[in-house]
Structure formats: structure tokens, C-alpha cells
Image (cartoon, rainbow, N blue to C red; front, side):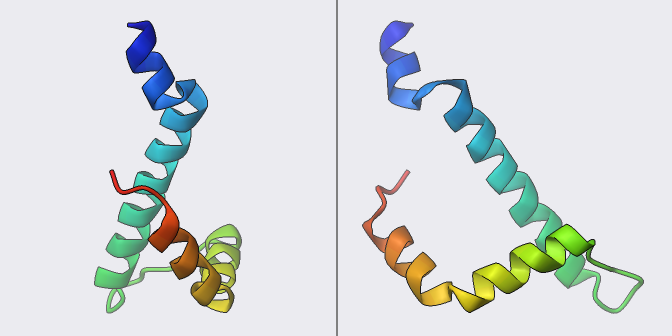
Length: 68
């Protein structure tokens, strides 16, 4: 059990991973529903704009991060 816990880097890692997956799926559903009344919250707008403005740096970080 301890080895698994160390590999997962604890509950903080688990929460970050869950949040990232949830945000990705939510944004995907908003994009797919663009013809309907899909709308982003102000925080979602800030996140999307941040990611767009820093896409090069985020791509580099993703490339050098370990693959799961």
C-alpha cells in the first residue's frame, strides 16, 4: 500500500489528475455543444485564454513530462 501511495504522490496528485480530467471533459462537451446554448464561465474563459497564450510553453512541458 505504501509503495502505491508513493507512486501516486499522494492525494494531491490524485485530486489534480481528477480535476484535469474533469475540466478537459467539460470543455470538450462545451465545444461539442457550441451550436446550442453552451457557454463558458469567467474562470473557464480565463483558463482557456491562459492555455492559448502559453500553448508553446505548455506543449514543451507536456513533451518533457512523463507519459502515463
